[in-house]
Amino acid sequence: MLNDVFHIMRDVNNQYKETGVTATKTGEAIHLPTVKQANVRVDVEGLDGDATLSIKFEESTDGVTFNEIGTFPIPDAHHGILFAKFQPYVRYELIVGGTDPNLNVELSF
Image (cartoon, rainbow, N blue to C red):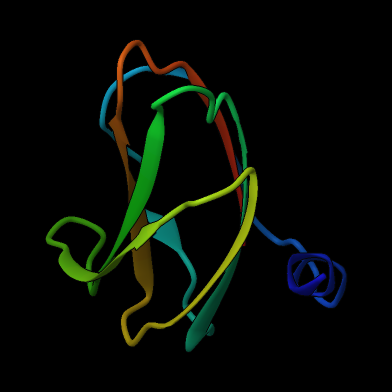
């Protein structure tokens, strides 16, 4: 229920899709200059067997040098994350575990 409300009550301005993720992967720098808190909807296909996913978010003043905001485990196929950010750039790192994971991940900001 909470994830449904989380998804419905916002406008999606940025959407990022990563397909066939089998190992840890870092995304590109995302420019979010006026956003002081990030509201991210995460949709995952492939969390089967022992496959696991956590997402680390980092922020930056220049889009080059990043500092960690936090790491969030993704326990199910549809998950919401809300975190404060103080810099204009953010990026994500998909931390994948398990035997032969193959994930399709969509992040909507």
